[in-house]
Image (tube, rainbow, N blue to C red):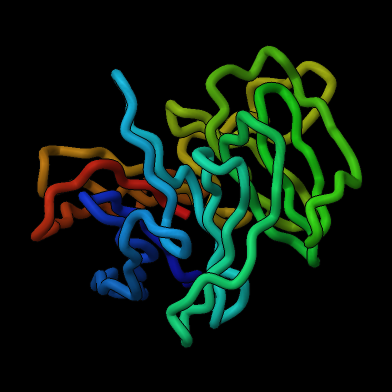
Length: 214
């Protein structure tokens, strides 16, 4: 089964928790907040802003979407250091990295950047899809992930009901949802085309801020 990744936000950033076929969770790495080479963090009235998404770039690099600096920051996992950043437009919600290109999600549009931050293409998506929070690329198709954990194909035309999936698409026939049950536990629900086949409660020693399947 394809590896599942979870993102947990604590008082510092811990990321990429791997669930193998038996779904035993382990921490892969963590980064501290702030500093010239750390993860940008901003404390403001009514809202604290930090990292909104991350993407593994092979086995030795990770890229963070940082709304504070309006950039994608890239770190080397082996050397534990900051490498470079890619400037992007304000208001980004999520991004994915496919074939050397960054697809960045904004309100009702997806902007395609190259590795130097130059815009290659802009694609609008159906404005009837509300509260889109994530992107997925599966079988050469872009999908939108909504806040209420539904999956939509990127399309300009009107969507049919059978094109909308319950849960975030993880593979062509695999969908997942997380249900936070308290400060230290959450449920993971996995479903295929024939319905739910796995549900389990996981516990965390640190207080959870958010859980996100990647």
